[in-house]
Length: 287
Image 1 (cartoon, one colour):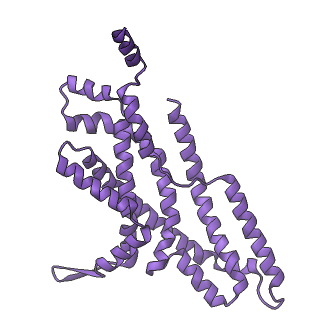
Image 2 (spheres, one colour):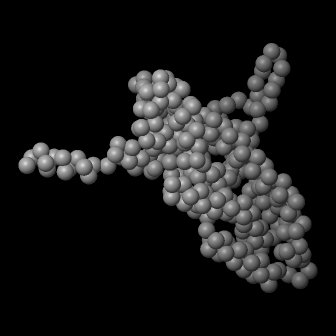
Image 3 (spheres, rainbow, N blue to C red):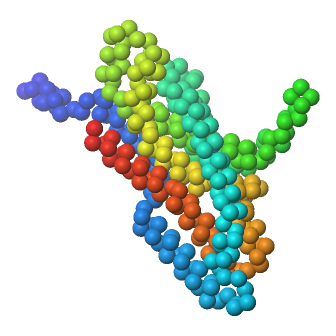
């Protein structure tokens, strides 16, 4: 009886791959917010209401709010493109470093695995703004190589500061994706005389790309919104330019319309990324 009961209990145990996939799926999820059409509609309503209210309160002799927004749109667009440049570079650096760190998290050597865990947890849980200040004050403003002075501008420092938390989160995404691959893949590769490195780079990681893509895209959207933190450390991006415009115009009624206008730009850029992310997650979940 005890043997039969034990066999019955073993029959309902989930496969090892399914057990590993549960925590791995949580690690691969971004954990960030989602951009919804309802939020976009609410943001658009706030923008329109702020423009109408400011126009009603404006003096007849002053320029209209719409005219001011049109006037400063080219300059705002330059700042917004600079934010996108920072986000693209930070995402590229964070992805490359995070992939290497994620592979180190899977190392069979305890010192490597432990050191990578410490680095991952530190940068994953550190506040982004604190990391920005840390990088801004730690790195010099210029380098001297062979008698040649190479400037190191603030926007590059901000890019590195934003890449650090992305690196840590990408490391967890890579680790979770690798652990979600069924263990039969490793066993089959071992039976074909593949080494662990060959199995990882030629068999496992190529299968992880589609699993990592949705959280990667969502983290890119979050990073794009976070690039506005660079204005606090002196980088001249769209939020800095917006503040300068309000000071130049000297009109308090322009404050809410222009900031909601810029926020609407960020939403229009990040919303398609969020929609695509949800579609990819739904597609891969069905397989």
